[in-house]
Length: 338
Image (cartoon, rainbow, N blue to C red):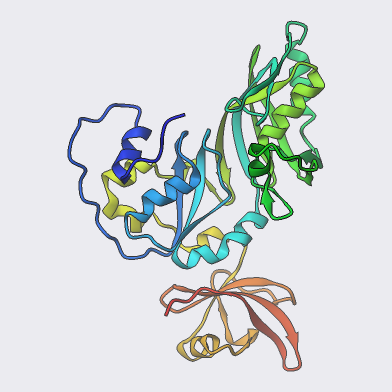
């Protein structure tokens, strides 16, 4: 694998590029004001998700995170959270699913369950038919549990499994609940198979490939993976590191507002007086807020919403709760900036 420990943003961009850039002095990057919202990054294969964030920090984006990591070998949609949007990561991870396309190779198994790991076993696959592969991929749909790869960020007694595996320490096998809503075979050219899958957040596609190989009796490893969609954004609204490097001054226009990231959450606008009370920790009666969009249905206890100022800047994620004086908005997460 390439060394991604280069000193600068430009080094990463040139490494990501499919073409060789001429040797030149790296341009000085502008220090942009901290942005607030979601940048849909089309992550390249090679760097880790954390390395991509490090590159963006060089543009002055110190308050930064992401929702749903991608392994270095994977590409596609990485939701980069900037400024106050770093506070909504948990809601993005629980409120929607993901779509992946990928490829696997039958006939071997590795310790990481993908092509990046050390080969553990090899097996003859000449008895495996295309029909058998298609049946097994169709069986992914509706899977309710899957094994967690031994090389993963899942933790045992506070330690990531990949650290235990690298140290040669045993850890109990873990399983997690998932939901597969769609699975299809795109192409079969044995020993290679291409597929697409729609799944719940947290699904390990490596595990699907590994389990398929086990059922076929010959092993299988994941060789390619692209995240095409991470709720609620797809590749159609994404931007590459190369685009950002070429026109860093356009970063603010590519950052989407928090309300776009939570499309099923209704938005309510506060006046100056209500905004001041909210900032001071006072629960607001639901009746004093004005709902954006169509005519507002009745608010029910437990309903979640986004409160925003009149200028459209988000103030808080809130939830309706019963109180002696009626329904009030209680703050789940404050988003305002000082």
